[in-house]
Image: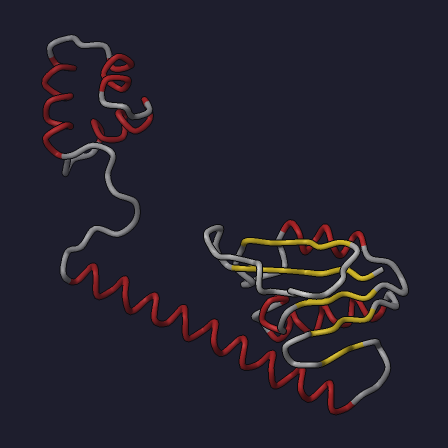
Length: 184
């Protein structure tokens, strides 16, 4: 059986170009980071494949961005008699000794891991820079400072918090959190 594994990092990314044109019997798709192997579709695929199956991934970094995880996955699959093909790199692993493929896997896996570390470093730098200039990080606030002040006044006057949450179109948890906040 020919099985495809597709991965993108976020839900808004497109998976169409990966494994395009390959005739596959089944495809597993994750929309999650490859920082580790606890991805639902990956785990499902690992439980699904059987001896004699062929697993296809667009590229090495789609399967793993950590050299240890990559080698573990390849060894786990080939140990069960399953071949693994990385289309972009043109590499296939079947469990047979192939020193050149092993070298290429190690080098490409190391580059994937290095790239992930660079991404994390740039992200940390961006967050630190945003914090230095006082920019708000994360999702936009549901309630403005003015909204919270109005809600506090109305709660002090005896207004029902559930009704206020509905009026301001927020959950009760958000309302309670805003009321408990000292800087809102």
